[in-house]
Length: 150
Image (cartoon, rainbow, N blue to C red):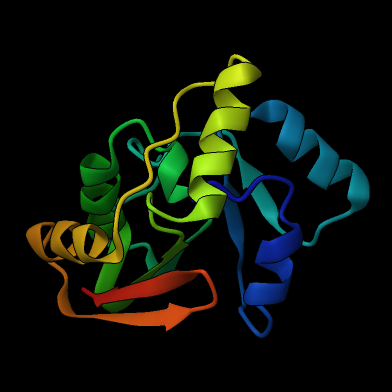
């Protein structure tokens, strides 16, 4: 979810049988296609995933959750498309971090949409409210992985 050109997705999804990159910016997916990324690109938003319920066993958002217009709706959509036992993995940095403040400032000066950084506690709460269970937070470098099971 928010996989850009697929570079990180390819590394993160090693061993997966099928890999889809959901990315709303066609310029980013075109770069991935030109680079030959071995994934299927789908131009769509995390808040409206164009797949049937229960289709996937994993959904991943790596440094993209802060771009989602409605993070709560994106969590509900992830829950919808995941099969029972599926996992939603989010990695992001908290709004209070230097990196988040710098990225927000950079985005505003470039005229981009506002970035919506939240804390890992807020991410965990949103996953729980979307119906995920066994939600856990694992700090990593300047951010945290937040993982929930469907």
